[in-house]
Image (cartoon, rainbow, N blue to C red; front, side, top):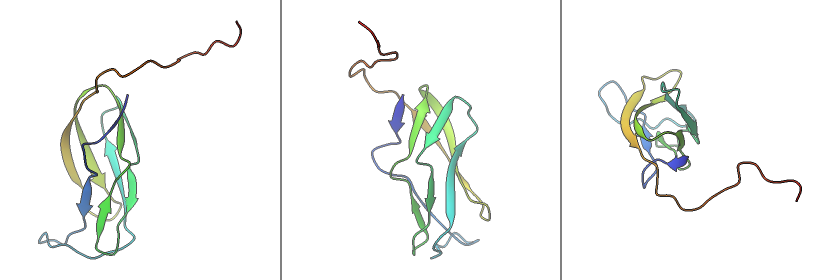
Length: 102
């Protein structure tokens, strides 16, 4: 089941060695998980002029449970976050195979 992460979009900030925010535009950051049971969509974004990267469309697909996701870039040290992926209440039914003849 697809599930949007939380009620707000994750936002990460580019920082220097002392943890001070840096205004660096154009840095690509990816969201990854080592857990094979999850697929991530909306997990690639680029920093704005303030060095912030937001992921408004970040979604997980997979079973409910704890997951650690990492926000990584080729040239920067990444950051990780442990979250609980929950599946919502049933809201309807969908076709898995649609009948083609009646």
